[in-house]
Length: 362
Image (cartoon, rainbow, N blue to C red; front, side):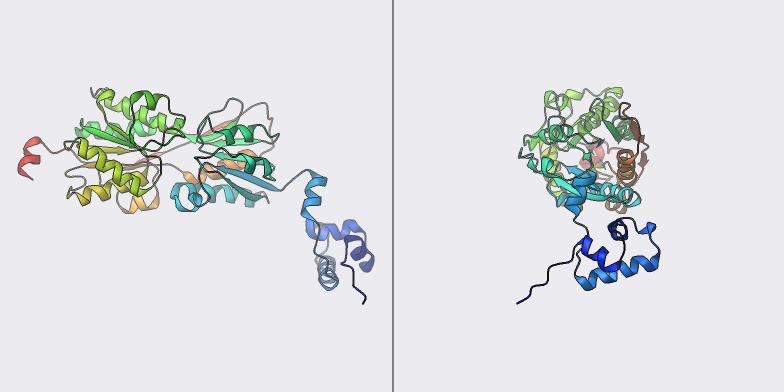
């Protein structure tokens, strides 16, 4: 029985009576051919069973993968579950689309140190999204001879970065609470290091935090409270490893159980703040009459709930990171892009109730 051999680029070119470059251009550089010629090439390819150029061979030849790698410090599902991460991902995707590049997600398990996914990734450059400064996956990325841009954290000498001024943003927000009269304040923060700690975070742990965004936000709250005469060492800070509303709920419960007289909770993310609001309602506490709560990020759900928070431009951050990576510039001159934030006043912050009001009611 005669078995027909699959068509190749050379046999397709011979069938059409054109050069192999012409066939290649029909797939890779269609602007180089007339619409009629390209259509004839593709129709003949379908008839003969030609599958198109081998992308692996092409990448070996050009030394270009045609894709940007996004290193996530979480499991893959986190990118599609967390609103801030999803907004960043959309912005990065828009930048890649504009440059005709693909996007390759490189998720990592925060509790494992397997860097094989980084070394296997066929990408022309990396965007590193918010990882701790001691993460081995970051070291693996920086060991590869491709350009890298860091989004948010960490700050790496000689590496481009896109972010916001976290400390200044949350300082301004916390100052609103002190201006309202709050002095008995508790804080809920995201993880400070790669080791799991679901409990109170000492000042020493805060200062040694490997996630510098969280360190900066805690420092900003400390600045605002310190200016109002509140000693930071007396402010309870509860840390949660997992970033979820359930974590916000349990952290708020831990704080309120330890000090029922707290008048405000400052959360370093909206997700944690929304969880804290759930716990307040469960306890019969009215927000903000009985308890003020603030967040950080400005995600859509927070705005729908009227949360007092800081809005950061997550989509524009992703787009800026992509553009920075894909721009052709002098690699010896690292760049830093700092985006603006704004405070959303919301409806979850009000003056604290007096002792009499707490005892006798409104």
